[in-house]
Amino acid sequence: MKSAFEHIQSAHCENGVTTSLLKHNGVDFITEPLAFGIGSGLFYIHVPFLKINNGPAIAFRTMPGAIFSRTCKSLGIKIQKIKFKDELAAQHFLDDKLAQNIPVGCQVGVFHLTYFPKEYRFHFNAHNLIVFGRLNDNFLISDPVMESTTELSVYDLNRARFAKGPLAPKGHIYFPENVKDVCIEIVKKAIVKGIKRNVRDMLSIPGNIAGVKGIRYTSKKIRSWRTKLGPKVAGLYLGQIVRMQEEIGTGGGGFRFIYAAFLQQSAQILEDQRLLEISNDFSKSGDLWRLAATKMAGIFKGRNTTQEAYDEIADIYLKIYELEKNAFIKLKKLKLT
Amino acid sequence: MKKSEVPQDDSALNNVSREMCYAQNESGEYETALSKGWNVKKEALDLAWEDVNVRIESAKKEVLENRKSPIYYYMESKLMDFVILSGYTGIWKWKIKRHLKPSVFNSLPNKVLSKYAKAFEITIDELKQVI
Image 1 (cartoon, chains in turn orange, blue):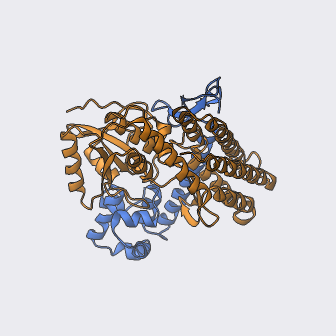
Image 2: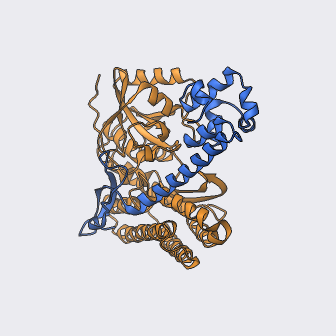
Image 3: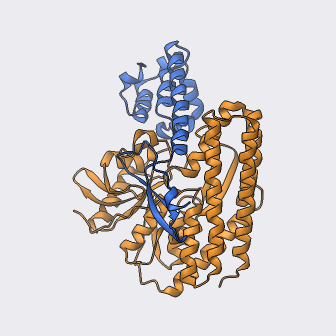
C-alpha cells in the first residue's frame, strides 16, 4: 500500500511536517518559512539550573508541537492530536490511518532512528517525521530533514514513538482534518497574528531568561564560564550551544535565516515593503549567531582559550540582543492589521 | 548568509543526506540551499563524542575494578542518564543508584535485570559482564 504522498525536504523537522501535511491536504501556498512564521516559531530561552546532556539548556525556537498547532489553527484548519499510554493501541491507530491513506505526523526520539548516522543519535525526543505508508514489516517514512524518504521497522518506529526521558513523545500522533480552501484573506490574517505573537514572546515575557533578554542572560553567563567552570567544562558548554544553534534543522543561525525568509515572503503577501528592511535585521542577526559559533569552535578546539575570547563572544551576544530587540520593536510599531 | 557562503565541509552525514538551509541569492532574496556540512558543527559534534567516550571509558574502568555494577557502564555507553534510564526501566532513580553497587547488583532477581537488559537492548547475560 503506497499513497501518493510527496516528500518535501525542509530545514527543520516540525516546519517540514507541517508544510508537507498541509500541502498534501491541498494548502498549496504553504512554504516552510510561512509555517514557521505563522506558528511564531522564533524564540530564545536559557533555562537556568537545568542541564541537558550535561550542558546548558538553551532553545532557539518555540516549544515542540506549537508550530504545527498554531499554524493550523491560524489558517482555520482542524487538527487531531493524540497521545497514548499503550504501545499496541498507538500502533493500531497508526495502521488505521495508513489504511485510510492518511499520512500522519509523529513525534519521535532520535536515538532510535536507525537511518541517521550513529553520530547524531542522542536521546533527543522532540524530533518529528511523517509516516505515509507500510510495506510489510517496514513503515515508509518521510523525515523532513532528509533528502529522500526512508523506512523504519515496526520495532524501531515503536521504540522511537515511545522513547523515554525529557519530552517523551508518548506515541504522539497528529494530522490535519477536513481541510477546506484557505483564502488569501485568512493567510494575511494568520501572518499578522504570527508576527504579533512572536513580538510578544520575544519582548514581553517577564523575567530575564526568555525572549531577547535571554540572549543577554547567556552573554553574562558565557563571560563567567571560564573562571567558574574551568576551560574544559566551559568548552563543552560552548559546544552544546553550537549544536543547539546549528545542528540538523535550524536552517542556519538558530532559525534566524528562516525567519528572515518568512518576513520576505510576508512582505510580498501583505504587500508591505517595510517588512523587507526588518528581514535584513534578521539576516544580520543570523550572521552574528554564526560568527559567535565560529568563535566558540575556536575556544573548544583549543585555538584561543583566553578570557578575551569568551568576552568577545559575550559581546557578540549583546550585539545580537540589541539587534533583535530593535527588530521586534520595529515589527511592533508597524501596527499590522 | 549568502548562497555562495553556504559551507560544504565534511560531516558525519556524508553519503546519507545533505542539510537544507536558507541563504540569500545575489539579489538578496532567500532561497533554500543544500549543505554537506560545516566544520564548526563538526567540531562541536566531535567534542560531544570525545566527552561521551571519556565517560564510557571511565565507567568501564570503575566496573572492571568492581567499584560500580555493569549498569553504570551500559548507561553511559547508551548515552543515558538516570532520568532517561528511569524512564526506560520504570525503576526509580534512587533505586537505580543503589543498583550501581556491585553487591546490590549481584543479588538482583532476573525480573529486575530483565528490565535493564530491555532498556539497553541486550541480554541478561550480556548485562552481567563488561567487555
